[in-house]
Picture 1 (cartoon, rainbow, N blue to C red):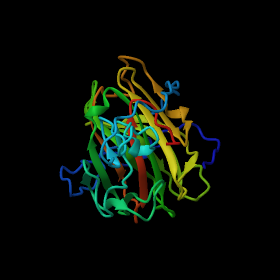
Picture 2: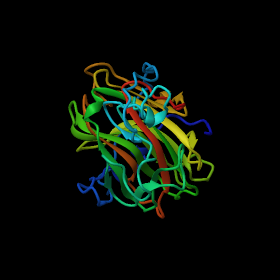
Picture 3: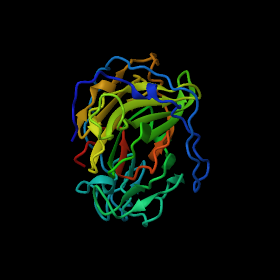
Picture 4: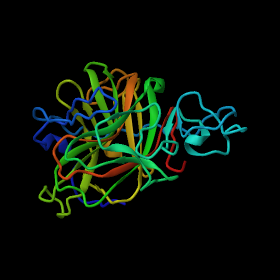
Length: 320
């Protein structure tokens, strides 16, 4: 799964030569590659304490018509049942859920808008079922889909499964898989990156030359300089499916991140109410963005798949 070696906790994006910011396209069909700005900033904070794990599952909805694989607030059961025996998005018990099964290959699920290209539903890989969201290879910029997130409230849990095709580009590059748009308590409009990575290149410091070691990080991009908290480089892109989860909460200014069910304490944040330094978590998010956005050029680009997207007010886990 991952390889551990003796490194200090280092926030890699402090070493990047260009800011990890981009201007998302306003069009639901167009792109707009992300472009770098000024020098990045940010330093590694101390390890935060572990947030409380929510219990899995919530009350399922009532029965009725056939359930779409793309569901949002209001939960619905399967045909003629209460959803209690159904799994994943079919159970209807998550605030927002997308498994891509009901979307035509080459399309984008209902309720989501496309930003950048290539990104579309495909049937060549899937963590479950037969389809997933495929992100095609381009050197830089966003290939993502957006969905309204106002129903999430002041705190939520999230889960995706992802897979990255090998070989990966030989580049030192910051890439975002899941981000949330909102207004920070003191920073204004910003993107909060909850599934975020930085990858070393083959000539990077203290690696064994394979060029695929990554760190995970919590990263925030306001109008000014970005900031966040990063892990060491104990992971790799492996051409295998991995489950990653996050929990983020505005009132307590807390964040936790899990890889294949294991808490990554190095990037946990537990600031407490009213302490926004290094977190700046909004009480409400307007949008969730899923896919791939890399902020430095990494030719020929990354090919990746994302599946089983779910967000809820209780922990979803990796078994579902």
